[in-house]
Amino acid sequence: MFLVDTHCHLNKEYYPDGLSEVFRNALKSDVKRLLFASADLASTREAVTLAETHEGAPEIWALAGVHPHEASSVSGGLPEELEALARSSKVSAVGEIGLDFYYDNSPREIQREVFRSQVCLAKKINKPVVIHVRDSAKRSSGDANSETLAILKEESADLIGGVIHCFSGDRQNAIDALDMGFYISFAGPVTYPKNKALREIAMDTVPLDRILCETDSPYLAPQQIRGRTNEPCHVREVYEMISMLKGMSLEEFSAAVKENGERLFGWGGTDNV
Image 1: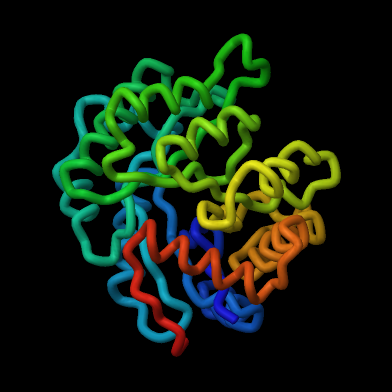
Image 2 (image 1 turned 180 degrees about the vertical axis):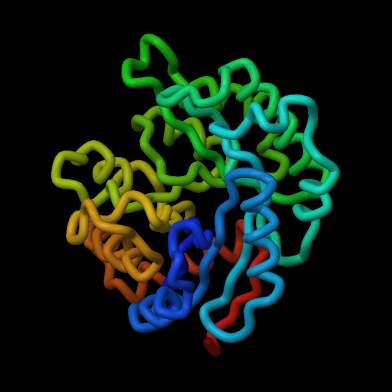
């Protein structure tokens, strides 16, 4: 079996003891491919360096991008270095990028500006985008999901495609993303007892050929270890939950998700890991 964690943060600050045990745990759980997410220029450097230098299993790929929390750091324009890093053959997509109206760590207008510029970068280098989106505590004070989808449409992001990572929107948000050809990724929250609506979206709204699974490590640990540091091995619980919802075996479901990731990110179909 070949499981893929399509969104994890493997930065040294989160795993100060190194990644050797993290990788061993992943392989014990059949997690054989990891996509190292980026949040700013420094973490993009770290992700790309690891992806380019890591040998052996699991496979490591990288994202290159600036998270909406850090948008103010590039409000004067995207650094040339970011584009250079994004062009690496080990960078699968531009991300994670988008809008976050929950914390508002960067002013919303700057978030919008930086988001648009990174979609343009992705189109320039012909790579998909990985989208972060989080509404304000009350949607009436900021519907980030709807605004994110509107920007993606305005910027013709359907030309490159992408994924809404750690999906937390409603059914209509999922439909709108799917209509643009985007994928929907689910993380630990799909296992939380109170998230019935999210499980229904995974079960009934998102077709099998558009689903991805992730941990968003070290965040959002699944219910079984909720409150503890997450790591890629625990993506298996996400696979188990959604395969059950879909009425499929874990083996069948994981094979479908692997194909989805390869289709979106251009990964070679490697089974000898």
